[in-house]
Image (tube, rainbow, N blue to C red):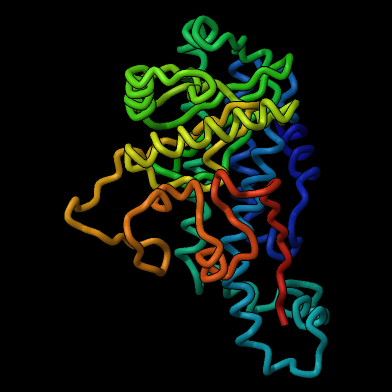
Length: 344
């Protein structure tokens, strides 16, 4: 186990080797626990299965450490005002005369105990989330094969990916499992009753081609669900593209009718000529029927289809200090997040 764990940790691209010292022991603990868990399931290529999780955890833990490090360096800036930013950053951590950590770097742990408690809690909840998912995978294997046509034998597991979605119920989040033959499966730690209600509503509407709306296949369990994975796929012709936008219009009408309010680009997948809603949790949103205005961002506006978030006005984009739309039907390309810490 130790050799596998060390191999994974050595491959991780740490954002900063100094800050990593604050959380490396927690990262090692979660790696060892996960290795033990997947070994029990009979996974073959354990390092490949777990690497992305550990990389994701390292990035998240660094996000927790960075603000307090940046603040402390700013506080001590006046003591080293003649140094360059790079020298000042290094000297915050390393005492060159003693070849060891400085006292101020060591004091961070005592000064911000709540941050390190949060780090430990994050690691524990991440492990429990994945452990629960894998145990349920084994239990529900036959149902998944029958309904979603995915061979979920743990031996075939290639990768576990944690989504960047919000965590609920003691740190649980959406998990994407990848198996051999590029088969994928989505695990959600929530009941799929909302998706079920949406499907019933669409069946009642019985929309004709090319205004029909498709939804993902799913398996409803008690407080959790398994979903079909829908990949992004471009249209192959102008004919398909026209149909895509016709269906986008009907989807906008349906979701507005059902008071949907979280239509940003990460909650919808374009799969050929069909748009797929992949996060329906804000359907049936409640608001006062007598209320003529609703709060949208920092502005009050009349209740319109803009409330869905699937589209937005250009002036709203500018007022939110953005250059491009993040709405599902207007965003272009992929969202790319570049981590560029600036400390001076």
